[in-house]
Structures are given as structure tokens and as C-alpha cells.
Amino acid sequence: MDKVYASAAEALKGIPFDGMKLAVGGFGLCGIPETLIEALRDTGVKDLTVASNNAGTDGFGLGQLLTTRQIKKMISSYVGENAEFMRQFLSGELELEFTPQGTLAERMRAGGAGIPGFYTKTGVGTVIAEGKEHKDFGGETFILEAGIFADLSLIKAWKGDSAGNLVYRKTARNFNPNAATCGKICVAEVEEIVPVGSLDPDLIHTPGIFVNRLVLGTAEKKIENRTTRAA
Image 1 (tube, rainbow, N blue to C red):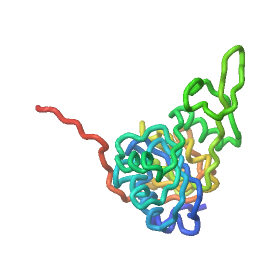
Image 2: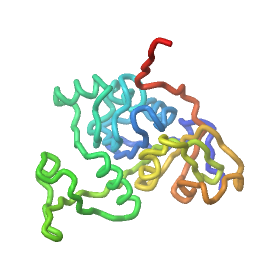
Image 3: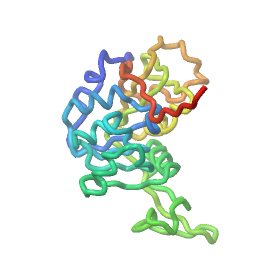
């Protein structure tokens, strides 16, 4: 089955709706589906709940959807590098569910595996644990975290074939494999599309069974923080 679409707009056609829940891959500006996020912005869909490590930077990545007020709630582990994120949260315009990074990754993985919840020690005794079920195992306290089940997953990979098999490159893998599996529909953006059979099966990170649509990315790569020193 050829899952390749001519553009990001075509790849998202008929999917977005107001109030939907998304899982979005990426860490900072590394491995984020820039082209798909821009296309989602252009649909005008609103009241979104987005599970992602962070919300990009001001005016880029998910930061674009904050600028246009299309996100109602973020489920995130990091809110730095984005002044608009901070402003909306502090002013009460944006709901925020803080989740430790490892817990967020596991919540996505659990959702993709059909697991509704799991217990973890992370966050016990902090504000993260408030309102959550506590349970003792072996004399230690754990809290119950819910798996993330999204309506749509937007992810970024390095290479993909027309059947949707994906390979990530180094740290750009980050949350993408887990985000890919927990959505009812997964749309992937890749840097290169290759023929079926050209990817080594042992090197495929996300099998095509999890990917519904595929598009070649066109967005400019950005550097979140450029640090230089005198030669």
C-alpha cells in the first residue's frame, strides 16, 4: 500500500477536528514534524489538547499553534524557551498538565500498547502526585499514571518507505516512536522517501503498520540555541 501524500495539507485532509487530542514527537526543535504542524495550523482547528515534551519555540513548531490560540491544553514535561507558552500559562489562557519526561514517554508507549494505566515512583511526594491514586508495592509507594490515547499522532523520521516503515536518526528519535503508536491515526513526516525493500528490516524503528500517511518534509531546520566561541 502506498501511503505517500503529495503535501502535508493532503496528508492531514479529513482528519483534524476541534477539541481533538494529539501526540506530537520531538524534543525542543529536534525531531519535530515542522511541516505537518504548519499544515495543522492552516486548517484552523482549535481547542486542541497536545501531548508533547514541549511546545517548540516562539513562532516555530508547536509554538505556532500557541500564537494562533489553537491549543487549549498541553501535556508536557518542559516549558522553557517559549515566552508565549509561559505567558499563556501564567495568565490562565492555557491549561498545563506537567508530566516528568520518562513518565510522558511511558504514557505514550502504554497507550500504544493498549495499557490504560501503570504505577511509577516518579513524582511521589510532589505536586505531580496530587489527586492520583497511590499504591504500595514491596513497602514503597507508587502513583497511578494514565496511558495516552490520542486521536492523531504527528511524528518526524529520517527515512521512510512508501509502506510507512520508518527509521529515525540519532537523538531525533526521542519521543517519536512512542508518539507514533498511541494515536488512532499516525501521520509521519520524513526527510527522505525510499522504495519498499530498501530499508534493512533490522534497522526499522517504527513498522509501517503503525503509520497511516506519509509526507516528505519541506520545513527549514532551525537551531534552538546557537552557542559560539572565539576561534
